Structure formats: structure tokens, C-alpha cells
Image 1 (cartoon, rainbow over the protein chains, first blue to last red):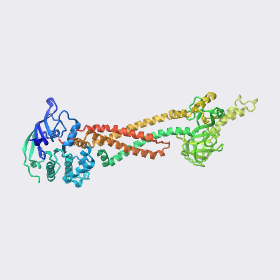
Image 2 (cartoon, chains in turn blue, orange):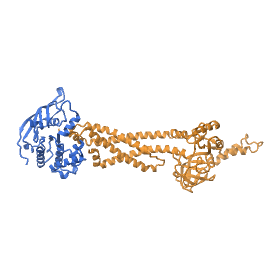
Image 3 (spheres, one colour):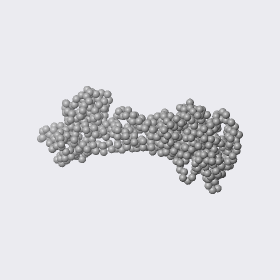
Length: 238
Length: 400
């Protein structure tokens, strides 16, 4: 069980919005574990608390109770500041969104290398690492292209490269295959799986996508603010 | 470190350049307005410099020949010449009027000077063509801004004058070009009456029994002659001997001649502090309004540009970009826009300044002050956009 401490471990996570009679419990004691190198699915109907859980995991909103460990670090206590949370997101969490949300005025390489460059790393070093990731994700040939000139699949691969640039121990993917057809969706899942194993990253994929649900070996179903662990089919991605 | 603002500007350079050009034209107008004020002050100083005078002797109780009308007897200069410390003294008249030329007319300040050479009080210091006035009548030296050419004839009142010399930067405090003519002609022109008025005056004087007295032969003729001549000038320009103290000499003339005397500093304060004060205040108001309009435009543009990138800002915040990096990006864009605008404005002002009818003086001091003001205005204008960007919740980047 110690392996989960290096990935994601959530115990009794609660989130309440509002106070008194108007209070709404969005999360009522969530428990999850994701080991480094593992890709786990998170599914559930609309309003079940997926996005709230993702925001808590992404250090965007503060949980009301419970305990979270991301990449070996217990997060959220009274000592955390906004800058600490920014640094946590920058160094320990990678985000992949439903829409890639690439920065329109930066080329592919600089979109990927942006975070290390903003953190003060030498531009050449950051770009070299970005190039390595782009090669690993088979989009190195579009390194100088602007985001608007990429296909949807290429944009999503670039966003995955951006999520991996800081070698975060955790990646949170929010509907990463939603806008893609079956073939491209499976390609993205293959990449996430490969990158998770290669960089020993714990990956949570929030999805409604029926095409990719069978690919998870393990998944969590969230319902009414509580999670249930299920065994997935673990269908081969290859 | 990568410059997000710089990359955004390079990516959308057309938008920035066109916006910057629009802003730049506004800044150009602002710099030009400042230049108009500087030009007025410089015109006033040049007017004094070109008078070649150390003291201005004028009618008592008046502010001198430029700010108020002044009238002195034209023989007073002889007495002034005898005062200690005075090297040279010369009469001068000033009259602003429309001067007729072959095609149309030109507004000018007609200056009556005693014929002489350069360095004489009242004479134009330097000529760019031709020669100084050497004859006592019907010669003129004109400023090139009048558009007159060498050899051209102009009509002042009833007389014709040939332009024998051209000078430069000899303008009144209003910016009207000067035309120098001999003093006697100028005195005549200043008080010249039309033929009917002269005939009427003669008739009235002749029929007046108090002066048309046969017992006093010559009285009527002398009175008529006095009525038809003008023994007045507007001022006496005084040059001091080397080492003479202007204030002491001025005090002596005030005391013994009972006239008003101004030194160079006093005359400059009259011109700058009184004559062009209202114009300066007018321009100052324009400058304030233009600064506010510029600030509003920059604020609106930067706010709109920032709002157009709100999703990207949310993503930047979510993936860990610090607030200060985002604020710096917006500030850099505002400053970049201001710099583009300033360069365009400076070039535009430099280009169009010579085409203004009055002198526009663009000085480095105003340019630097303008640059600092633009950067300050852009910084203030970006505050609204930075505030909006910092309020963006990174959670907005996560769907649901």
C-alpha cells in the first residue's frame, strides 16, 4: 500500500458548498488510490461530484475534510498559500483537458516548454526537454507549428506533452478523448498509458467516453459524492 | 525567461500595430500641442533676442510695446542716449496689419526701425538673403514665413515697399512674421488718415477762430503741420555699454526720464507670464483631456485584449503560472502598446510640425516627459485588466 503514497491517496475526502440549511455536500467521503505508473478511470453521471473531486485533486478548491496525498506530499493545511498551490500545480500535477487549451500565440514547442521557462529554467534546456516529449508523442514534426494549424489529435498530444514537462507524479485528465473519434481516442489512451509507465506517473482519467472505459484495469465510479472501486476489463490498447 | 507579452504581440502584430498607430496619432497630437506651447514661448524669446535690446523704454504705466499699446515722443531717445551705461538707443514702432502683395495679402507685424546695419537696436540680426535697409524710405526686410520674395513689392497703407532682404525666425508673440520698414514710413503708416479725414480736419482747424488768427502769422500752418505728422513711437530700445548693470540703468531712466523701463527678464516674464498665459492654460487643458482620453483608450484596449484571453489565463493559472507572471504579461502588453504609440506619435509629430502655420518646437525634455507619461498612463490603464485577470478562477479551465 505504500506505493500509493507516491501516487495518489485520498481518504475520506469531503467537500461542502454553502452553510447551514443551504449547504450541499458534493463529496461525502471519497476514497481513492492510484499507484505510480497506473491509469485509473473515474466515471459517474453529471452532478455526481466528478468535477468537484478533480478540482480538489488539482488543488484548485480546498476540501472541507479528509486527507489527500499527491506524489508523496500531503496537501492542504492551514499553511498553504496561493503561491504554494500554484507551485504544487506547476511541479506535481499535470493537467490534460477536454479541449487542449493551448496558448494560441505560442508555437508547439513553447506551449510545452512554457512552465519550466516561466519557472526560470533556461529556455534552451526547457525546449530540449519539450522536443524529447514531442518526439515521444510523435508530434515532433509539428514542433514549430502554431496550435491553430494542428489537428484535434495533435493538439491533445501536445497538451499531454505540456502536462508531462515537469515530470509530475500525478496527471489529471478531464475528458481527454471527448472531442476525438475512436481511433484518435484510443491513440490518446495509449499515449497516456505509455507515458504513465515510462515516467511512473499516477493518472486519473475522468470520462464519459464509452469507447475508452473498457481499457481501464481499475476504475472508480462516483455517485452522490461517494466512490466505489470497480475492476475494469483492462482491454488491450494495442 | 520567455516573454508571453512579446510573443502575443508578435503573433497578433497587425492588431497591435494598428491599435498602436491609432494611439500614436493621439500621442502625436499631444506632443504637438506641447510643441505649440513651446513654440509660443520660443517665439516670445526670439522676439526679445532679435530686438538686440537690453532695455525696453515705454510709456509710463504700460506693459510695453508687445503686451499693451505704448506711445513715446520720438525725440526722447536723445535724452536716453545721454544716460550713464547706455551705449545705443533707437526708436521702434510695431503695427500688426494686413500687408498687401501682388497676389492677396499677408498678416504681418510691421516694425519701424532706424535704417542701419546688424546689431543696431531693432534691426534683424541675420539675413538669409539680400541686405539690410539702407534708405530712409520704401525698403523692407521681411521674414521668410511671410512668403515674400526678394525684389517683391508690398503695399503698406498707401506706400509701396520693395523687399531688399529676407530674414528668418523674426515673428511676433502671435507668430505673425515681421516686415521691417524705415521708421519714418512706419510712423506715417501708423497714424495715416484717409484724404477725406485730412480735408475735414484742415477745414475744421482753418475755421476755428482761436487758431486762424491773422495777428499771428504762421500759427495755422504750424498747427496743420503738427496735426498731419506723427512724432510718436512705441518704444525706445536701449543697448547697454559693456559692464553696465541693466537694473541700475533702468532705474536711472525711470527716475530721471519718468518713463517705464523693462529689463530683458522683466520683458520675458510679461510676454510668457501675461501675453501667452491664457493660451498656455488652454493648451494645458487640452493636454489633460488628451491624457485622459489616451488612458481610457489604452485601458479599454488592454481590458478587451485580456478578456479575449480569459480562458487561456485560467489554464495558465491552473497549470501553475504565478499571478505575478500573468500581471507582468498584461503590464508588458500595455507598455508595448504605449511604446508603439509613442514612437508613432513622435514620428508623426516630427513629420507634421513644420506644416503648422505657427512655430511648433518639439524639445527633448517634452519628448522624455511624454514617454514617461505614456508609460505611467499605460501602467495605470492596465490595472483594470490585471485586476480582472487575477480574479479569474483557475477552476474555470476544468469543465463542469
